[in-house]
Amino acid sequence: MSEKKYLLMWLEGPLQSWGDRSRYSRRETQLFPTKSGVYGLILCALGLSGAQTEILAVMSDFRLDVFGYKKLKSDFSENSIMRDFHMIGSGYDNSDLWEKYLIPKTQQGKAAVGGGSKITYRYYLQNMAFACILEIPSNFDVDIASALETPKWPLFLGRKCCVPSDIIYRGTFDEYQDAVDKADNIAVVKERYKSIEAYDGRRDDLEGVDFWVLNDVPVEFGDYKKYRERIITVRKS
Image (tube, rainbow, N blue to C red; front, side, top):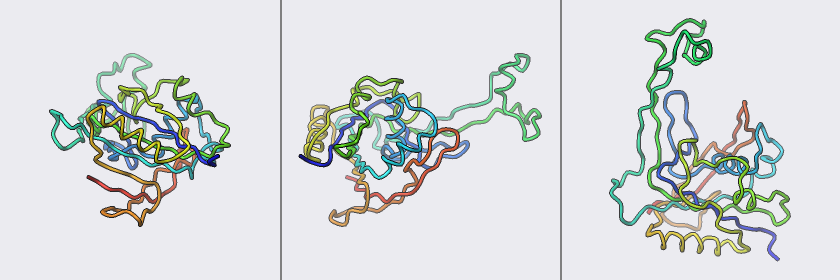
């Protein structure tokens, strides 16, 4: 029996957003699901909130490979990234004690110039689908598959406005290639082609690749989020 299992997740929706370096008023998205984003989705399915440092410490080195698929026939342009201008801090009633707390203030707690309203720039991947293959030890005692099939909390593709449009859990396999073949078969049925591959770690055996460093391995969730870096191998078609 194999010492590893390979869990396949299919993440598809009109919009997805997987931030790995977003700050303040500019919320960017990576070109594919990040490890922190996928793990956040899994913990949400399990109904686990807060820091969750113990389970993250166990899962931090699990291998996660991601394959992205575009549509063969689409009315969208070749650029799959959409930018949205999002207003925050506006429309609140200053006379309402609850809404008053939601109005942006200066560092001194005073009313901001112009009422505190700000435009933020939010980026989304549109009309994409991703196959995420997570390598799990056979003796791992957390039933991720069951959680994804019957999640405790609603699941989203990076942000709460990004709702999945298809079933996420697509099976657990004894062999890695079986999971890859299953993902490719799903893509064929959906008339999609593979446009990007992101492998966990450095893959010197592949041609036409780039090596990236992402700060997306979650060490701690909750109020004080912490991450560490990993190297990934990326190939675009």
